[in-house]
Length: 110
Image (cartoon, rainbow, N blue to C red; front, side, top):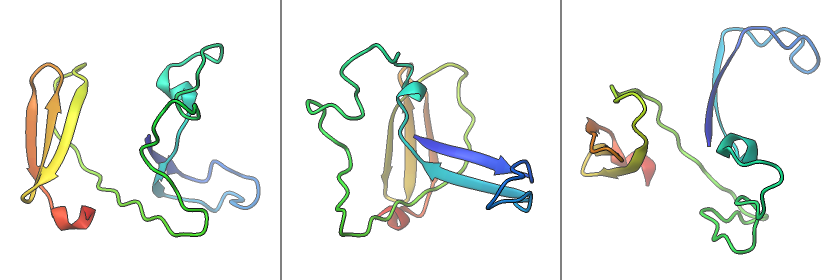
């Protein structure tokens, strides 16, 4: 999942010591709790051997993850079914039929 966060001095302990002011950040992460899966449920979809991983990291290599942050008007409650990027456009398609297309520099994602 992608997490978008802000900080304004709320962490008063080291190493931040209250100096982390007016900051916005983006981080990638994986958390079963955020997927709405209870601790009693098995198998864990993030670690199970029967799940094919979407991203395999080489422990001796370098991995680059690029982000683009923006916003679009979207129907309330409609889940996103697919996001595609091609020919200078990103297209977001919803499960209920909503479609939004925006211009992007698609070479950034390659």
